Image 1 (cartoon, rainbow, N blue to C red):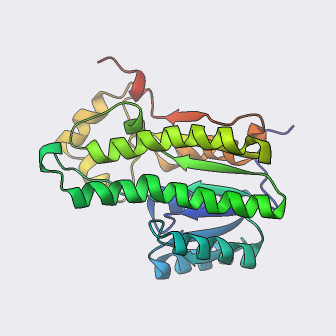
Image 2: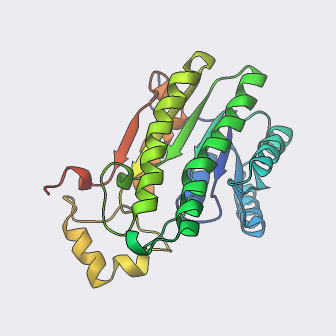
Length: 255
């Protein structure tokens, strides 16, 4: 088997694809030959990005999606199926964060974070798996978790709980859906620089954080390409229920 990820003929749904990790992952998969559906609440943004990918010669469509709404999820998966064919790869990336101390964390914020990061990931995974099973095809689901689901920091109680739940959900779905030829794995990125966090990471507090990473740098978006393509492609045909950490050694740094 070639180690080059050729995703020609694959249909990919990427949630949270309007910016950051999700948009980068959608572009990476499209450039590997996949037909890609970019899904997000900000439809105008994913429409623009889908057009840009089409201008490069890729097959890409934009899909409106609110992962916290099961009806929106079912409609989005149906749109992907009608436009591109049944999805064979899902990148469950949609998520939100917070910076509240636990004593000040409101019920509304806690519910919103868990509803998006954990419940939403389940709704999308379930709808996509149903589409795969109905079409008689297997596939790969890649849940985007976080090192904060494996080891905690301050002021991220709801986020850490949601990502820890997503890690265990990954394992549970991998167990149930293996008989359908559906693999379910997770990526657990460390601190990866994006437009949204660049200002913080360049601050004094951010640089102190960088000093605790064994590789002494923050991740770049392209650092996720290899692990993503591995899990999305048939190169990982015998891998399911796994969590791949991409963090420059942050998790194994000394306490």
